[in-house]
Length: 388
Image (cartoon, rainbow, N blue to C red; front, top):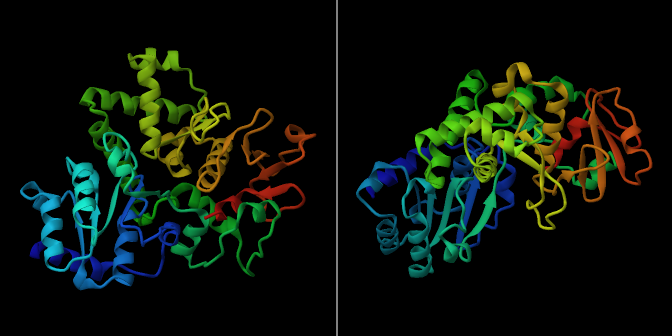
């Protein structure tokens, strides 16, 4: 345990406190067991280290990563037992999906040590309910997305701007600071602002993240072999070339040489891994269960990295809107226009986009790129990046 404590101390000393992700203030840190999932690279590790450093007594806290070689010979539960014997109260476990029987041992920690708080992070592919029904009743789960445009401005350019509630965006209730011009920064955000990576090697890091998600994370939970992982990569390439993609399951099944059911499963895995986003209709009645109408890449950075020559401007705009808005609202397809949120219809386009698609709609809005200010029912696209 001494080696683990030494590594923890080193990580704490290297953790800064200048910027906090939006989820930092949303988590109820008083819960006995907390799970934080999300795609690779969105800052989960930094977030939990910041909370440890800023709020908890060092002598009663411990951070470990489940991929540490220590766990090749030791069990997580044994570590928790020893930690509690020495007065430990706050155990943070990163990359929990790297540990084989994570759900069983977390359940036992919860049951055996009511005085111990356990916080763990994992891949967004990790399903807390699959084979772990007991744990689902014990752990309070949170899911974290990448940087909003507002967070990006704060982290990389020092603009500390407020979050805008959905209704304030619709009402154009934002005081733009003197000297702030969003289009000095918006194109850069669309290319490489969603992930909190250093920009000098951004593309390399992003492609490494994509490959690890497809080749390691998804196969680990779906019981896939190498050849199936290759099919996942091929499916992602097909989607990247044609987004927004109108899914034809039969055609995709033929191209990939798999069953129709497998295609739907593959798309779900890619969605859970934060690589694609599926726009559904409202037929399901429950969030996320409607029929898939379109498939997008998850965020605009992936469009530029994977689509490259196929990085269509209209698709970039729609992807940005869908990506930023689905954090706080359910976004579904609209029969009249592009998107529907809480009874409001949105048509997304450029400066010259007109009102034709939303004529006669009571709560119809035109979302325009390339404008700095809005008026009436016309809202600048960049403002939708201030929702979290």
